[in-house]
Image (tube, rainbow, N blue to C red; front, side):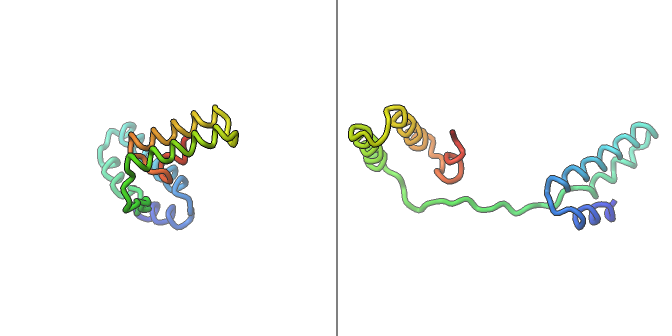
Length: 116
C-alpha cells in the first residue's frame, strides 16, 4: 500500500488526481473486505491517507474598520449615484456589498470578492 501511495504522489501532480486514485484504492480494499469477509483489508486504508497540505494564510488587515469608515463609503456611493456615474441598481449592489461586509466581518479579498 505504501508503494501504491508513493507511486501515486510521484506520478500525478494534481491534488484531485491524488484524491481520486487513493479513494479508488480504498474502495477496492472495502470491496475485498466485504467479498472475502476479512477485516484485514480495511486495516491497509491507513497507508492510503492523503498527505497533509499546508493551507495558505489569508490576508488580515491590522486596521479596524469603524462605523465612520462604513458611513464614508456609503456616502461616496450615494454621491456617485447623484452625479450619474453609477446607476441606481449599482448603488443598491454596492450598498448591499458594503453592509454585508460590515455586519458579517467578511474579508473583502477572501470571501466577498467571490460573491456575485
